[in-house]
Each structure stands twice: as C-alpha cells, then as structure tokens.
Figure 1 (cartoon, rainbow, N blue to C red):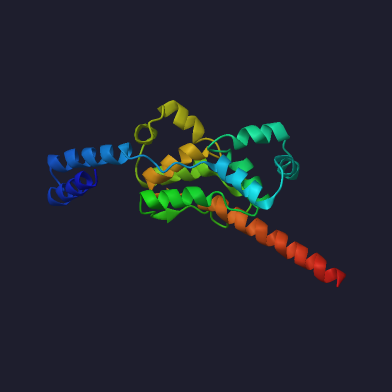
Figure 2: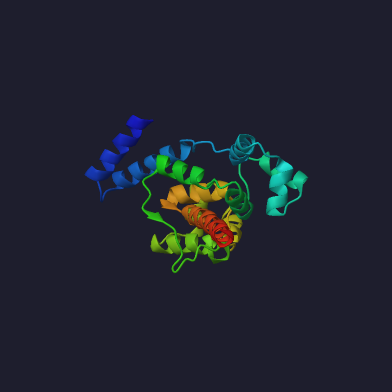
Length: 209
C-alpha cells in the first residue's frame, strides 16, 4: 500500500497537467480512503480515567447534570456528543478531544487549526458546521464532493453542516479530508476552563488566608 502511494505521488509530479495525473490522483484518493482511521474509543478512555481517579459514574453524572443511566450508556460508545464530552473533559481535567487531534496528525499533515476569531473559550462561540462550510469554500469544494470522501449521503451531510456541533466520528473524517484540526477549538475550551477553575480556587484560598 505504501509503495503504491509513493508511486502515484511520483506520477502526479511528473505528469502534472496530463490525464495520467488525474488517474494517479484517483488511485491515490482511493488508497487514502481505504486506509483505516486509527480506532478511537472515548467511552473506554473516560472509564479508564474514572477508575484512575477512584470515582463513580454516578458522581460524574451529578457533576455534569446528567442522569447516571444515560451517562453510562454514553460511556459504552466509542464516540460521544461533543458538548457532553466537553463537560466531562472539564470535570475530569482531561482533554479527551486531544485523542482526535492526535489521530488527525498521524493520518495527514494538518494545514490549519480551527479557532474562531476573537475566541473567548466559550462553547457557545463554537460553530463547527460554519467552520467546515467556510473551509470547503476556500477549497472551492461542494457538499457532494465531501460526502463522497467520507462515504456519507449528501443530504445527510448538508443537515449536519447546518449544526454548530458535529458528531466526532464524522468530524474526524472531515478533518482528515480537509487537513484541518477542528477539535483543537474544544481543547482550548477545556484548557481555559480548567485554568479558570484553578485560578478561582486559588483566589478563594488566598482570601481565607
């Protein structure tokens, strides 16, 4: 597989403006699509962290304002809704979004990290759907093209891109295709929230001294 990818890259460079280049590009895209994305199991990673801290799922559920049974079902999944994962990351002081960023960087060379302009590390300022549409316009790409790359129905993809948050499994594939780390925005939220909480506790401690 690796040799095939190298060969197609050489053909692309040698016949940049010919029909052979187009053929080589198609072969290269096919190879990239068939290579499996590294498996990520966020639910398992969270349970590991819970065990490491010696806490219970019920305790975590109370901290994030979630029903214990509902949270337990979420933790049985490989991917978790980004808004819920953000809350869990902050409570457990662990950036679980970094798992996705690491996976993206193992797969492609990231050309850009998505961070909104004047970003104040607030989750309501995050609009991943808008960011993806914006990136596609920079590439002059269409929904149908992106849908083919991630093996998704175009109308389904269009609905997803109208939302502020996109399910991590889809966003991971989109990030790899567009060579843009959209998860880093959530990571910034986690880091800043943890820092703010530490600063708040330090301020309270100092006020009592």
